[in-house]
Image (cartoon, rainbow, N blue to C red; front, side, top):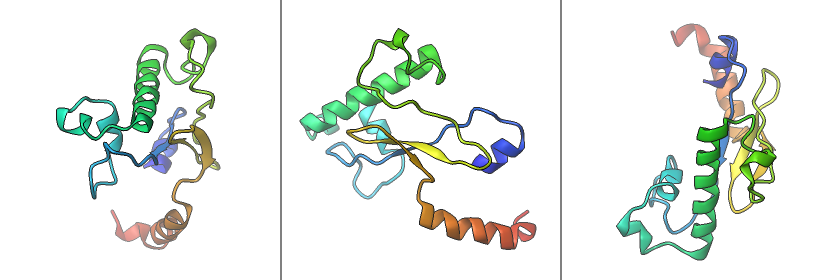
Length: 131
């Protein structure tokens, strides 16, 4: 999807991986677990740990700052938030930085690198058959 967006002229494509595993993660579900740290759920509240509260703060700050300031300004001094030390940068045709969302926010390169190598090769070999 990222390649398609870039190919069609998108310039501000950002990637993230929610790698935190805590008490509010849905068992057996690896996608969209971050929603459980953004929305309140009485059933999940009973499973919330002190570490989960840190992630809840990080997630609500990230999403609020994105909505108010946009990605370019969400890290600046206007946000007044010292808990977001990492500047999130967009991907390009040659680089795939992503924000790893965990107790420490870190900028990493090429999410799921080993899995993506397989799919990149698969797509190159069979792209004419996938249309």
